[in-house]
Length: 117
Image 1 (tube, rainbow, N blue to C red):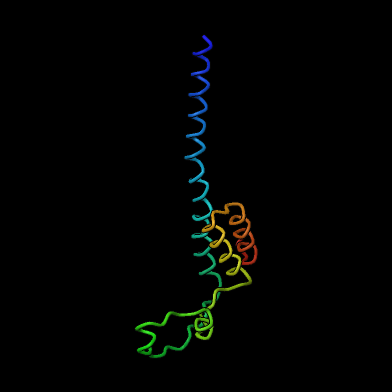
Image 2 (image 1 turned 45 degrees about the horizontal axis):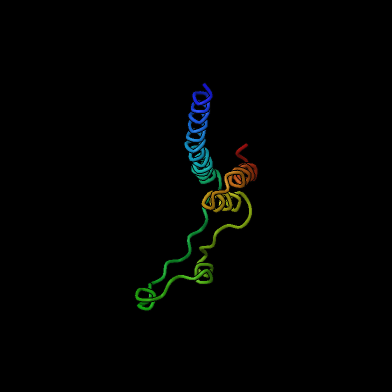
């Protein structure tokens, strides 16, 4: 009898661990799915940023030069660091780092700043 109850307990424990393992990825997608919907809502709601003027690409840029943060900034292509888009960018970075709670908090801030609440 003792062996039977120990086997049942071990089986129940394994089943619980399997359920937890499958539940974790589902929760990780929750933030990613919300990022997509908040990003679309902000895109419709906020004014579109101006595009930088187009310029010819140099031969050096084509062959062995990579864009740097300063060259991107000079072209007007910086990531937003404030407001709704900055909070959304932070949520994207936190989601990529696996911080679900931080991602959801940053998304709530993006919604608040973007007037989506």
